[in-house]
Image (cartoon, rainbow, N blue to C red; front, side, top):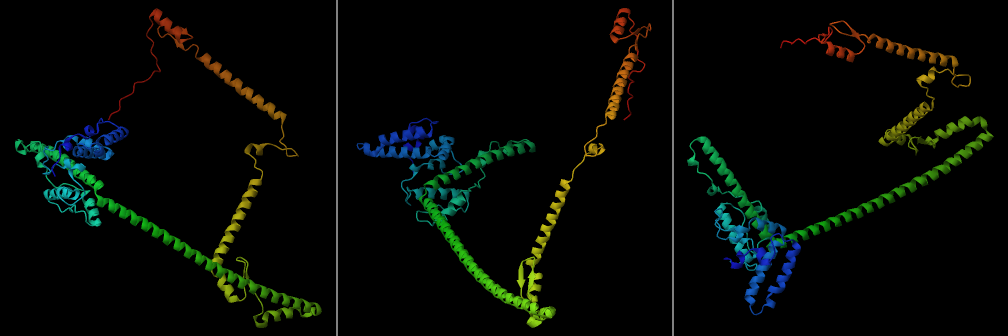
Length: 451
């Protein structure tokens, strides 16, 4: 489980690209290195070529995935420095973010399942938790799903006291000690968050490369397709059953209609013969018309029929007719007919109201002649024009009187001289120094209200 020197090199350095290169440049460098480092092109030094080619494959696998590339960029220094201090775990988990830490997908110590089984067992033991084990190559798929589900929600139970910034014993009073505890808790929370994220990222890294997980995904997809197919088959069978039921109902309805038509034809022929014989007897013996009708109705109950005009149905006996009159179908038909009738009545009333001529208030006051045309009285027009002229003249006189009243209202309070305008008054005050003007009707000072 010890790493090689290639594992400590930067992935960007291995690929020969810049850290801000795009996917297109990375793929171009990968194709170039594949041609240069392929073992078949370096037969003289095949072992070194295989190691370099594997390192290049691992670097491209990490950098081509946007999620893993972002994680590598954030923790590059920790990944490249295997001797860093990681007190949350006795292992340096960053060095297991590469496919170079295992050889093949076997259960031995250097294989995929052996390496990561050791890693997760160590974390589980240090945390003192009962999380499921990683398992082996032949583990049950249900156990594999349980492992990734539980570990995907990993949360450390360690105290992370080794990241404390201050010692609480250095506090002189309780306020300082509380502040020290607050700062230490903040540092512990931050370190716990980093460690939880590190373990969860390692879970995702392993999950993408675990062949058991790929088998599980394929099995679930196959199960989903099978369920979908069975659901479609059930829906098709149900549709066929519905079609068969509809066909049987249609056939039964057609047979019933045929029987009804046959019965109607038979009753129609018998009724026609009875009417013909009755009319013939009435022609030869008109005096016995009423007796014949009474006998016809009383004989064996007669051929009397009961018709429902609402539902357009005919019954041969009174029992079925009474049952029909109390049925829900008949009552619904009666309600529908009533609603339609009321609706038609409302529409007719509304239409008649709209057709009536509407006269405005002014139209009602206009006098009409014998033909219904409005009458125009010339005398009224002259009187209206005269009233308008009088109002206009009154407004002009009022404005003149107002202007004349205000013409001599500007007087000097010292000498009593009257001026027609304010400008003339102000000029007089400036020249003679009569600045003693006091307005008698000026604004009064507002009295302060008591609070």
